[in-house]
Amino acid sequence: MRKLMIYFAAGSIGAVANSLALWWLGYYRLTARFDIAIAPHLSPEWMYPRIVWGGIWGLLFILPMLQSRLLLKGLIISLAPTAVQLLVFFPQANKGLGGTELGIYTPILVLLVNGIWGLAAALSLRFPR
Image (tube, rainbow, N blue to C red; front, side, top):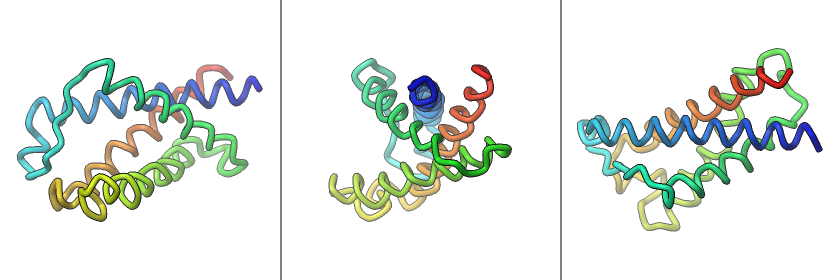
């Protein structure tokens, strides 16, 4: 149970890093420069579900792979929420496969910020050891 709590916390920390990165990119109009219509407002209502889901995705760190290569493991695990966002959530929200209705480079943005999630979550796992 302790490991699950640590993995959830790590995923939540990764989600904070992911969310701040995405907000920063939108706030400084870097997403707009690439014609990506994503510029979230930093608010508790936006952050809360992202942190909870980040924690849930963090539970994937329990998988017994790449234990000695934690950063690589984080990047590989980050592909799971990336795939769900691009192949499930965006199409359900009528944003096109991969979110391309938000901009042709949206899949790259999602891959980038979810990679930040994976790295931040993996780095935070080094502290409780």
